[in-house]
Image (cartoon, rainbow, N blue to C red; front, side, top):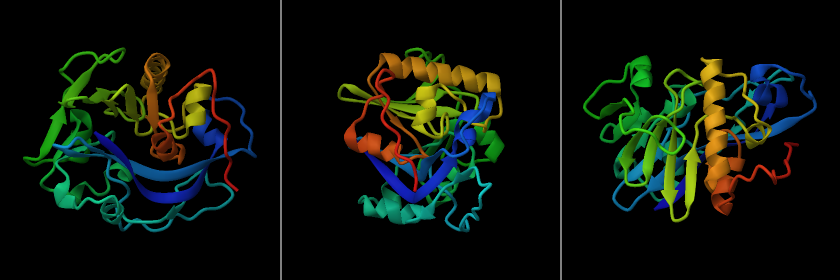
Amino acid sequence: MEIKAVKTYENGFMTQAFAFGGEGGEFDTSIKYRSSIQNYLIDTGDDVILIDTDMPSEMPPQEVDENTPLSMGTRIANYLSALKELGYDKEDVTKILITHKHADHTGEIRQFPNAEVYLSKTEAEELNLEGDNIVPVEFDDGPFYNFEKSQKIVDDVYLIEAIGHTTGNSIVIAKNDDLFYMFHGDVTYTDEALYANKLSVVFEDIEKARETLDNVREFVKNQPTVYLSTHTPLGHENLENKSVIDFENPPESIYPK
């Protein structure tokens, strides 16, 4: 199994209040965390599996000012070009796993009409996705470690129900060698929030979002887990370095300039 980051945006930022403020509190207005966008690809040898599909290619540049809570940064490649840079054409993709319905995670599904698209039944209905290649998941494969509901996609790759950020939110967990890789969508926006046990301000169900974050923290505390975020370069840096979450030794933050 090979896992790769599909990088499309860099040099963004998010405020501490945005990343940490879901359950209230006071925050340092001078602190901003790095932001980016990368989605991920799993090559099992038999399947090429995408985890989410970036922003729509026609999305205009974001207008940023002193009140912006989250800047995605500068687009460095469109999604298909980024895939090509990794050595894949769109025809190579056999499966797509969608964590949730937001446009920055679903924008280029349309480019892959022959790939099977797996996402929660709730999100499939929200997006009005139909077709023989759409697989609405009902998580009927039972528990996965401390998570209550899961769906096996292929050997060692699971879609996990993780409601909160959206009402049909999922995460993906893959096991390779002795490590688990958690592709969590937007359970947190930056790893600092995971270490600090803080919810972001973006959720549809705050009680479920808290439950999901608690479950994620329990999992990564007890299993050697590489935490793969969408909206911070820590995602691809963790992947490149095979960095495992260790709550006793949080990494030092690097702040955007």
